[in-house]
Length: 475
Length: 80
Image (cartoon, rainbow over all chains, first blue to last red; front, side):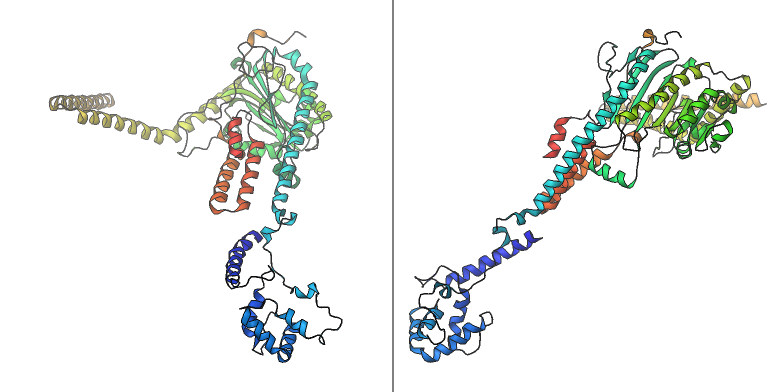
């Protein structure tokens, strides 16, 4: 703001200065100070009215002295167009006015003149306060970035160190970034981001592979840190186990916090289609109240919730966000603009686990060890799901459900699929016509047109035949 | 307990394709990049210093939130 004002003031001042200096042309000696105040008042020497900006003391003396030493003042006036120091002369002649006044008193000779120096000409720190503020802010951001990055890195390393043994005893391949030619364990986490770390494990019975994602809070972003002070959040560990087709029976099951269950039922494609009931309280199966269950088949719930599982879940209920077993997993619902997608999304047999790291943001590397029992549970679940077999009833019910879902889907998209087929046919016709039009030779054109006409005739005849056949059959 | 490991059943890691699940991506770095560009243009055209500062901040935030797979050269150019 001050910068803007000074920008405007500066040309104004320049104009004034130039105007003032123009009147000094004839004046050779004298001070270098710009005294346009006195300059203006040169005209007023004879006039009794006071010039507004001059201090009253000086005007009084001027008038008084004029009476006593008019001649010399006027002489001075004639010689100099503008008397820069009329006061000086006046003071010289009127010794009565000032007692103890010495002739050569430079402080009085120099008239007091307070000029406003434009702020941008001042070279003090204050004129740069905006820049200093901004740079300090940037430095704070950079400091936070470095600290946050290091903390996240330490947490990830601590997690890996505590889980390494368990993983290596269960999986043949621990750590793979997909780029190396041979499938060798890198033994390291993949750093996707400053706050997301991946680990891919593979080579085990019952499963194709396991993807572990350490989703830390964005400690490296200062904005995020400040936002978290308003809304606390915690680090999460997400585990996704993909299973082979033969390793899992057909069921969809989920357990987790009530909030998470409500959210997932709306978001997840398979949960919304197969588990349409509201989440049931976990208390029925011996779980704490905070956990809720979404399930397609009651039998599946019974099978999964055996004693050991219940034991696990009860002990670590505070760390569990959600556990989701599904043979129809296809990710969250995809919102498409043109309505429903034309094909059913691809499904994969998956087990998903989301765990919250204890500490609610203020985690230390030691807290990572608390997640080890959860990892044990994951491994246990993999084996369990493999062994879990539904009986005949359950399988039939599951089959019916899946058929129902598919039928619904087909119905919904029927209209769209027809439209798509229609548009494809029209496209073909248009392409044909264009080809005919673009043919230079009129002969060739005629021949192509005839060929197209013949094809149309054939199609119509075919349709008529079909209709006849249907009629005959109906009869 | 028998060893559950099966070296013959190893599957290579395939980074999840981001075209299928746009909802999983974090849009923050892209938004911040765009905002930074807009503010820097504003600051340049209208000669507003505070615009330029905000642009610098935006580019910093975008850098902090970005994925490591993105080009570092792009980051540097965005700082400019």
